[in-house]
Image 1 (cartoon, one colour):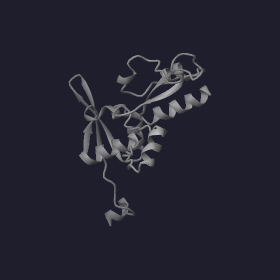
Image 2: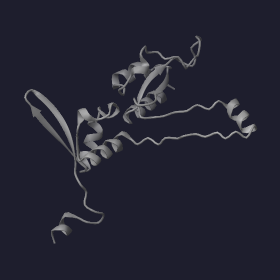
Image 3: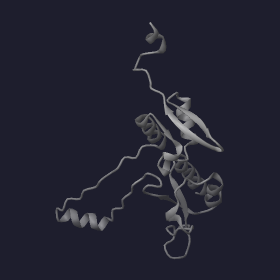
Image 4: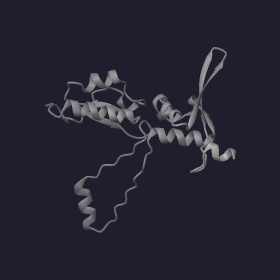
Length: 175
């Protein structure tokens, strides 16, 4: 079970989602499997490191929790069955707003494309750990990373590379 949880935690973290450990479902304390094991978990705003994931989930029976909202860019909702049944019985409409969240790599590309270029420091918090996503986009030829040096400070800028229209290549354009 711990290998499955660790694999899931790594997958969530690769998406840029923020996770933290919950108590074991086998725990005899109050709320087994639901109690956060970290203090300040509500303020976590970055994906876990590989070392943190190993510490929390490798050879452990802890549950995993996803921090929703701005930190991960994920909205969640919980429907209590008895409420749903009672409202359905009285014909009260139940409306849900489901939000589609783009993968962080797609969010990053959308922002860069929209602005033409953007400084790393101007990115929303959930996109500031962009190294892997930016490298993927650069390998695909969609953006260029530009390192700027201002005095002793180093800054990173991302620049959008316009793509030729579908079916058009550099050779076609030159003719």
